[in-house]
Length: 152
Image (cartoon, rainbow, N blue to C red; front, side, top):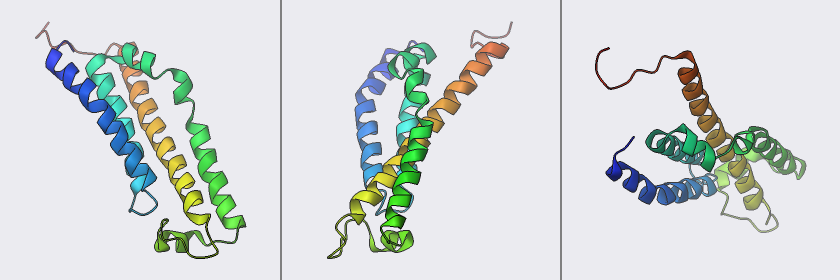
C-alpha cells in the first residue's frame, strides 16, 4: 500500500493499540474474557501493520522466532494453573473473587492469576499473527493474488 496518510496513521496508532492490548491482558483476571481479548487486540495490531506495510516489513519487525512462541504461552498457562492448584486454591473461586481483591493470608493469588492471563494473551496473539501470515504466504505461493489494476 502506498498511501502516506494510512501509513502515518498506522505508525501513530500502533503504540496505543499495543498499550491497550497489554492493559486488557493485565486486567484480564478481573474482566470477562480479558486475556483472550487483549491477545486478539495485540494480534490485530500486527495484522494491521502487515496489511499496511506488507508481509516483508512485518516479518522484519516480528521475525519467525517470535511466532515460535506459541508453546511458551501454552506452557506459561499450564504451569501457572498447576501452581495455583497445588497451592490449594480453587481457580474458579479466585476468578469469582477477583484478582485484586486479595484476602488476608493469600497474598500470592493475584499475581499467579495475572501470570495465567499473560500466558493466554500471548498464546492468542501469536496464534492470530501466525495464522494470518500463513494465509498470506499460501495465497502468494498459489498465485491466487488478484491485482487492483483492472481486468486482464
